[in-house]
Amino acid sequence: MRVWIHVMAATLLGVVFIAVLRIPGLDEQAVLVLSNGGQLLAVTLASLGCALAARRTKGRRRRAWAWLAVGTGSWGAGQVVWTYYEVVLGQEVPFPSLADVGFLLFPVLAAVGLVTWLGSQSDQLAARGRDVLDGLIIAMSLLVLSWVTALGSVVAEGGTWFSLSLSLAYPLGDVVLATLVLLALARGQAAERATLLVLALGLGGLAFADSAYVYLTTLGEYSSADVISSGWVLGFLYVGAAGLGAGDADVTAERQEKAGLRVSRPSLLRVLLPYVPVVAAMCALCVSLLTSHQHLAVDVALGMALVLIVLTRQALAMVDNLRLLSALAEARDALEHQALHDALTGLANRVLFADRLDRALLQPESNVSVLFCDLDDFKLVNDQFGHEAGDLLLQLVAHRLLDCVRVTDTVARLGGDEFAILLEDSANEMQVADRVVTAMREPVEVQGRAVRTSVSVGIARHHGRPAPEGDRRVNRLSLDSPVAAQLAEVEREATAALLLRSADSAMYQAKGAGKSRAVLADVGIAQL
Image (tube, rainbow, N blue to C red; front, side, top):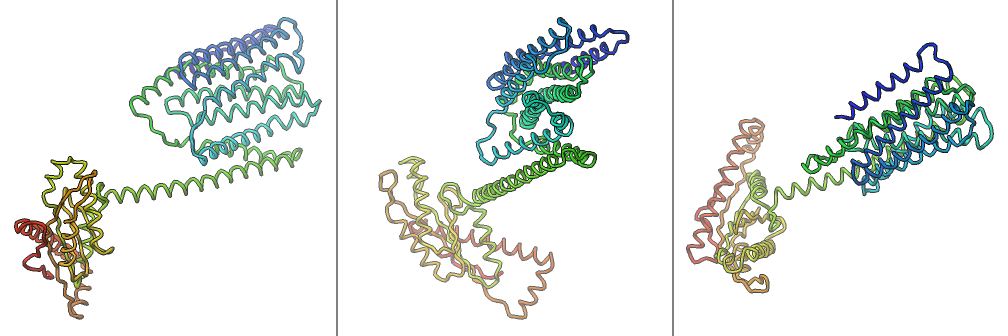
């Protein structure tokens, strides 16, 4: 991706800037000109890069880059004022000054752009709460780091409330910006992740420079010739490089979306990102507690607040996981139901019918009957009224079959207009078959028309007989053997196939005898 070429160029320019500042023999005025000029050049390139990105991207991304362009332009205006004081007037820049207005407007405008970039990622309340807590975890972690490194020193120095507030505004603004860009990095699309990473590096450089500036200003030791100026130069050069590469990322994401290659899935970076600054913050806090007792109460309060937010985030994650598990269980049950039931009638399909028949044959003493039902002249209904009417007729037939059997019996649609009924431990299979035949003779109303139909039923019976007690013990022992278990399974499959074949043959005998009747297979299927 071309963004990395821009990053290499930006890094090279930053190295050249640092090397030029370190040239031996440069007087103070030359260093001031080079330092301020380098910062002006860097922020100008950043503003141009963001403006170009706003022209090359679309929608929410365009508005985000436009806000970033305005924000970098605001910082550039502040740098112009700063340069005027130091280079033209040759005097120290007062604090506060008009330059601070431009500098402090940058995090505000850039934050608006990053919020626009993030947008609304999810409509689920739990997901939104998780995103908010992730932002709070990152912000609190960065706040702890800033407090340990810069904010604590600023507060300790005191001063007027206005100057103190202005000094605190720099690191706090950087905390907000860093939080937003890290969230964007975690939640961004894969195609634009490189651009966001470069943008994060740039804003990180700016945050480092701002924190160092506040710290050194508080101590009265800051100078434009300090090497920390390279933080602003490198930061804005990286922001410009991200802007130059944004158009390519947007085109790539658009192509992936059109090709159907984009998959919405949480990345490992998104899962781990909120906790990376937590580890850094807790380490820094522990070092501060062990080495300094100046702000002991504040350090402890910040640590407790961070732990509380992390625990709340974990609790919300547990609630969300329970919701996901429940949804997964429902989806699994739905898929299982679809795999074992007929989509049109809701009856059991051939697979479920075969499984229940096999289970019924597991008991040697069980009496099992299979009724094979086939609608008479169903093709005429399709030809005369259409396939939609035929489907409605099949649904009504399914309801009537269910009304004719017990709750424990199984009614299945084997395919087309063929149905099967499994009766377990029933001695009145002929009565059930006659009830089915009688029920189907009643006219059925389909699409406002009375449709007459009938059914032919073939019946096959399996007579189980209990084995003697001694044989039962032998059979139990023999079934422990894998070979014996396999043989028993083969016998059950053969018995099930014979039952269906016999019931099917009996059904054709019923059709040959005039239809709309039930015929029992000539010989019952005895225990094999």
